[in-house]
Length: 296
Image (cartoon, rainbow, N blue to C red):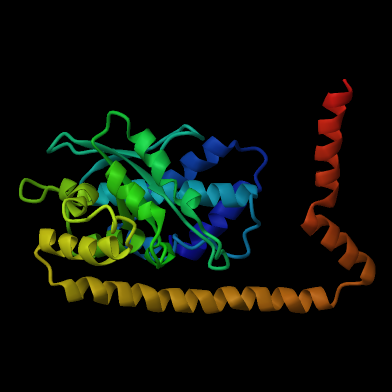
Protein backbone atom coordinates (compact mmCIF):
# COMPACT_ATOMS: atom_id res chain seq x y z
CA UNK A 1 0.00 0.00 0.00
CA UNK A 2 1.27 3.47 -0.87
CA UNK A 3 0.62 6.74 0.98
CA UNK A 4 -2.61 7.56 -0.86
CA UNK A 5 -4.00 4.07 -0.23
CA UNK A 6 -3.20 4.28 3.49
CA UNK A 7 -4.83 7.71 3.53
CA UNK A 8 -8.02 6.30 2.05
CA UNK A 9 -7.97 3.47 4.57
CA UNK A 10 -7.59 5.93 7.47
CA UNK A 11 -10.50 8.02 6.17
CA UNK A 12 -12.70 4.95 5.69
CA UNK A 13 -11.93 3.63 9.17
CA UNK A 14 -12.49 7.03 10.80
CA UNK A 15 -15.98 7.18 9.26
CA UNK A 16 -16.90 3.62 10.26
CA UNK A 17 -19.17 3.94 13.30
CA UNK A 18 -19.21 0.16 13.74
CA UNK A 19 -15.53 0.02 14.66
CA UNK A 20 -13.89 1.39 17.78
CA UNK A 21 -10.76 3.54 17.57
CA UNK A 22 -8.71 0.65 18.94
CA UNK A 23 -10.16 -1.79 16.40
CA UNK A 24 -9.38 0.58 13.53
CA UNK A 25 -5.84 1.05 14.83
CA UNK A 26 -5.28 -2.69 15.06
CA UNK A 27 -6.57 -3.17 11.52
CA UNK A 28 -4.29 -0.47 10.11
CA UNK A 29 -1.36 -1.93 12.06
CA UNK A 30 -1.86 -5.32 10.40
CA UNK A 31 -1.77 -3.63 7.01
CA UNK A 32 1.37 -1.60 7.72
CA UNK A 33 3.27 -4.39 9.47
CA UNK A 34 2.68 -6.56 6.40
CA UNK A 35 4.38 -4.05 4.09
CA UNK A 36 7.76 -4.67 2.53
CA UNK A 37 10.77 -2.63 3.59
CA UNK A 38 10.66 -0.66 0.32
CA UNK A 39 7.02 0.34 0.79
CA UNK A 40 7.70 1.21 4.42
CA UNK A 41 10.43 3.59 3.26
CA UNK A 42 8.06 5.32 0.83
CA UNK A 43 5.60 5.92 3.69
CA UNK A 44 8.33 7.29 5.96
CA UNK A 45 9.00 9.96 3.35
CA UNK A 46 5.37 11.14 3.50
CA UNK A 47 3.89 10.51 6.92
CA UNK A 48 5.56 13.32 8.83
CA UNK A 49 3.25 15.75 7.04
CA UNK A 50 -0.44 15.80 7.97
CA UNK A 51 -2.54 16.40 4.82
CA UNK A 52 -4.35 19.73 4.78
CA UNK A 53 -7.67 18.11 3.84
CA UNK A 54 -7.85 16.32 7.19
CA UNK A 55 -9.95 18.41 9.58
CA UNK A 56 -8.21 19.57 12.72
CA UNK A 57 -8.95 17.53 15.85
CA UNK A 58 -11.18 15.18 13.84
CA UNK A 59 -11.46 11.40 14.20
CA UNK A 60 -9.50 11.14 10.96
CA UNK A 61 -6.66 13.27 12.34
CA UNK A 62 -6.50 11.20 15.53
CA UNK A 63 -6.34 7.98 13.51
CA UNK A 64 -3.68 9.51 11.23
CA UNK A 65 -1.64 10.32 14.34
CA UNK A 66 -2.07 6.75 15.56
CA UNK A 67 -0.85 5.51 12.20
CA UNK A 68 2.38 7.50 12.60
CA UNK A 69 2.95 5.54 15.83
CA UNK A 70 2.35 2.30 13.97
CA UNK A 71 4.73 3.31 11.16
CA UNK A 72 7.39 4.22 13.72
CA UNK A 73 7.11 0.79 15.39
CA UNK A 74 7.27 -0.89 11.97
CA UNK A 75 10.42 1.11 11.16
CA UNK A 76 12.11 -0.09 14.34
CA UNK A 77 11.23 -3.65 13.33
CA UNK A 78 13.01 -3.06 10.03
CA UNK A 79 16.04 -1.91 12.05
CA UNK A 80 16.07 -5.21 13.94
CA UNK A 81 14.47 -3.95 17.14
CA UNK A 82 11.34 -5.27 18.82
CA UNK A 83 8.77 -2.48 19.12
CA UNK A 84 5.12 -2.22 20.10
CA UNK A 85 2.59 0.59 19.90
CA UNK A 86 1.41 1.65 23.33
CA UNK A 87 -2.31 1.00 23.86
CA UNK A 88 -2.59 3.87 26.34
CA UNK A 89 -4.06 7.08 24.91
CA UNK A 90 -2.49 9.72 27.19
CA UNK A 91 0.44 10.53 29.45
CA UNK A 92 2.81 7.99 27.94
CA UNK A 93 5.05 7.52 24.93
CA UNK A 94 3.64 6.21 21.66
CA UNK A 95 6.07 3.33 21.17
CA UNK A 96 8.20 1.09 23.36
CA UNK A 97 11.23 -0.67 21.86
CA UNK A 98 13.65 -3.32 23.11
CA UNK A 99 16.88 -4.76 21.77
CA UNK A 100 16.95 -8.54 21.78
CA UNK A 101 20.73 -8.49 21.31
CA UNK A 102 21.88 -5.87 23.82
CA UNK A 103 18.93 -5.88 26.21
CA UNK A 104 18.37 -2.12 26.36
CA UNK A 105 14.92 -0.57 26.01
CA UNK A 106 13.58 2.82 24.99
CA UNK A 107 10.42 4.84 24.61
CA UNK A 108 9.72 6.69 21.37
CA UNK A 109 7.26 9.36 20.30
CA UNK A 110 6.19 10.09 16.72
CA UNK A 111 5.41 13.62 15.51
CA UNK A 112 3.67 14.84 12.37
CA UNK A 113 2.80 18.43 11.47
CA UNK A 114 0.80 20.29 8.87
CA UNK A 115 2.81 22.41 6.46
CA UNK A 116 0.43 25.28 7.26
CA UNK A 117 1.29 25.05 10.97
CA UNK A 118 3.98 27.64 11.67
CA UNK A 119 3.53 28.53 15.36
CA UNK A 120 5.23 25.51 16.88
CA UNK A 121 6.70 25.80 20.35
CA UNK A 122 8.50 23.56 22.82
CA UNK A 123 5.20 22.07 24.04
CA UNK A 124 4.53 20.68 20.56
CA UNK A 125 7.62 18.47 20.85
CA UNK A 126 7.02 17.31 24.46
CA UNK A 127 10.71 16.82 25.17
CA UNK A 128 10.20 17.25 28.92
CA UNK A 129 7.39 14.68 28.82
CA UNK A 130 9.73 12.24 27.10
CA UNK A 131 12.06 12.48 30.10
CA UNK A 132 9.20 11.52 32.41
CA UNK A 133 7.92 8.79 30.11
CA UNK A 134 11.37 7.22 29.89
CA UNK A 135 11.02 5.97 33.47
CA UNK A 136 13.12 2.84 33.91
CA UNK A 137 13.89 2.56 30.18
CA UNK A 138 17.40 3.33 29.01
CA UNK A 139 16.64 5.84 26.25
CA UNK A 140 13.99 8.19 24.88
CA UNK A 141 13.68 8.88 21.13
CA UNK A 142 11.65 11.71 19.61
CA UNK A 143 10.96 11.41 15.88
CA UNK A 144 9.77 14.53 14.04
CA UNK A 145 10.07 15.78 10.46
CA UNK A 146 13.64 17.11 10.20
CA UNK A 147 12.65 20.43 8.67
CA UNK A 148 9.99 21.03 11.32
CA UNK A 149 12.53 21.21 14.14
CA UNK A 150 13.24 24.81 15.24
CA UNK A 151 15.78 26.39 12.89
CA UNK A 152 16.95 28.85 15.52
CA UNK A 153 18.05 28.25 19.07
CA UNK A 154 15.32 26.60 21.12
CA UNK A 155 14.81 25.31 24.64
CA UNK A 156 13.95 21.88 23.24
CA UNK A 157 17.63 21.34 22.43
CA UNK A 158 18.72 22.17 25.96
CA UNK A 159 15.92 20.01 27.36
CA UNK A 160 17.03 17.11 25.15
CA UNK A 161 20.61 17.43 26.39
CA UNK A 162 19.56 17.70 30.04
CA UNK A 163 17.20 14.70 29.82
CA UNK A 164 19.16 12.64 27.28
CA UNK A 165 16.35 12.62 24.71
CA UNK A 166 17.43 11.66 21.20
CA UNK A 167 16.07 14.18 18.70
CA UNK A 168 15.77 12.13 15.56
CA UNK A 169 13.73 12.59 12.37
CA UNK A 170 11.80 10.56 9.85
CA UNK A 171 14.54 11.49 7.40
CA UNK A 172 17.17 9.95 9.69
CA UNK A 173 15.19 6.72 9.87
CA UNK A 174 14.85 6.66 6.09
CA UNK A 175 18.62 7.12 5.83
CA UNK A 176 19.22 4.17 8.15
CA UNK A 177 16.96 1.95 6.05
CA UNK A 178 18.60 3.11 2.82
CA UNK A 179 21.92 1.96 4.30
CA UNK A 180 20.35 -1.40 5.20
CA UNK A 181 21.32 -0.70 8.79
CA UNK A 182 20.12 -3.37 11.20
CA UNK A 183 21.08 -4.00 14.78
CA UNK A 184 23.51 -6.92 15.03
CA UNK A 185 26.55 -8.12 16.91
CA UNK A 186 28.56 -5.60 14.91
CA UNK A 187 26.10 -2.68 15.11
CA UNK A 188 24.65 -1.42 18.37
CA UNK A 189 22.06 1.24 17.51
CA UNK A 190 22.01 2.50 21.09
CA UNK A 191 24.90 4.72 19.99
CA UNK A 192 22.28 6.73 18.11
CA UNK A 193 19.58 6.61 20.79
CA UNK A 194 22.19 7.90 23.27
CA UNK A 195 23.37 10.72 21.03
CA UNK A 196 22.21 13.58 23.27
CA UNK A 197 24.41 12.40 26.12
CA UNK A 198 27.34 12.17 23.73
CA UNK A 199 26.69 15.64 22.32
CA UNK A 200 26.32 17.01 25.83
CA UNK A 201 29.91 16.02 26.65
CA UNK A 202 31.19 18.81 24.39
CA UNK A 203 28.50 21.48 24.86
CA UNK A 204 28.73 24.37 27.31
CA UNK A 205 25.78 25.55 29.38
CA UNK A 206 25.70 28.74 27.31
CA UNK A 207 25.41 26.82 24.05
CA UNK A 208 23.05 24.02 25.05
CA UNK A 209 20.03 25.56 23.26
CA UNK A 210 21.96 25.83 19.99
CA UNK A 211 20.26 23.92 17.18
CA UNK A 212 23.60 23.26 15.47
CA UNK A 213 24.45 20.79 18.24
CA UNK A 214 21.87 18.45 16.74
CA UNK A 215 21.73 19.48 13.10
CA UNK A 216 25.49 19.51 12.70
CA UNK A 217 27.28 17.65 15.51
CA UNK A 218 24.54 15.04 15.82
CA UNK A 219 24.45 14.28 12.11
CA UNK A 220 28.22 13.93 11.94
CA UNK A 221 28.22 11.60 14.93
CA UNK A 222 25.58 9.40 13.28
CA UNK A 223 27.61 9.19 10.08
CA UNK A 224 30.74 8.37 12.08
CA UNK A 225 28.91 5.60 13.95
CA UNK A 226 27.75 4.09 10.67
CA UNK A 227 31.10 4.64 8.89
CA UNK A 228 29.29 6.62 6.19
CA UNK A 229 30.41 9.77 4.41
CA UNK A 230 28.54 12.82 5.71
CA UNK A 231 27.56 13.83 2.17
CA UNK A 232 25.43 10.68 1.83
CA UNK A 233 23.22 11.91 4.67
CA UNK A 234 22.98 15.34 3.05
CA UNK A 235 21.96 13.71 -0.24
CA UNK A 236 19.19 11.82 1.56
CA UNK A 237 18.00 15.05 3.20
CA UNK A 238 18.07 16.87 -0.15
CA UNK A 239 15.95 14.13 -1.72
CA UNK A 240 13.44 14.42 1.13
CA UNK A 241 13.46 18.20 0.76
CA UNK A 242 12.50 17.94 -2.92
CA UNK A 243 9.69 15.53 -2.06
CA UNK A 244 8.50 17.98 0.60
CA UNK A 245 8.39 20.82 -1.94
CA UNK A 246 6.26 18.71 -4.29
CA UNK A 247 3.99 17.77 -1.41
CA UNK A 248 3.70 21.43 -0.43
CA UNK A 249 2.63 22.41 -3.93
CA UNK A 250 -0.14 19.80 -3.78
CA UNK A 251 -1.27 21.09 -0.39
CA UNK A 252 -1.38 24.65 -1.74
CA UNK A 253 -3.56 23.36 -4.58
CA UNK A 254 -6.03 21.98 -2.03
CA UNK A 255 -6.46 25.39 -0.36
CA UNK A 256 -6.67 27.21 -3.70
CA UNK A 257 -9.54 24.92 -4.67
CA UNK A 258 -11.21 25.63 -1.32
CA UNK A 259 -10.97 29.37 -1.99
CA UNK A 260 -12.77 28.91 -5.30
CA UNK A 261 -15.48 26.82 -3.62
CA UNK A 262 -16.02 29.45 -0.91
CA UNK A 263 -16.40 32.18 -3.52
CA UNK A 264 -19.47 30.34 -4.78
CA UNK A 265 -21.17 30.26 -1.35
CA UNK A 266 -24.47 32.06 -0.84
CA UNK A 267 -24.51 34.75 1.85
CA UNK A 268 -26.46 32.48 4.19
CA UNK A 269 -24.09 29.57 3.81
CA UNK A 270 -21.06 31.86 4.17
CA UNK A 271 -22.40 33.16 7.50
CA UNK A 272 -23.15 29.62 8.69
CA UNK A 273 -19.68 28.39 7.74
CA UNK A 274 -18.02 31.35 9.46
CA UNK A 275 -19.95 30.76 12.67
CA UNK A 276 -18.95 27.11 12.57
CA UNK A 277 -15.29 27.93 11.91
CA UNK A 278 -15.20 30.34 14.84
CA UNK A 279 -16.99 27.79 17.03
CA UNK A 280 -19.26 30.50 18.40
CA UNK A 281 -22.00 28.18 19.65
CA UNK A 282 -19.42 25.96 21.35
CA UNK A 283 -17.98 29.01 23.14
CA UNK A 284 -21.45 30.06 24.32
CA UNK A 285 -22.16 26.51 25.51
CA UNK A 286 -18.86 26.34 27.41
CA UNK A 287 -19.53 29.64 29.20
CA UNK A 288 -23.10 28.62 29.97
CA UNK A 289 -21.95 25.31 31.46
CA UNK A 290 -19.37 27.12 33.59
CA UNK A 291 -21.71 29.78 35.01
CA UNK A 292 -24.31 27.04 35.47
CA UNK A 293 -21.98 25.35 37.95
CA UNK A 294 -21.61 28.66 39.76
CA UNK A 295 -25.37 29.16 39.97
CA UNK A 296 -25.77 25.68 41.42
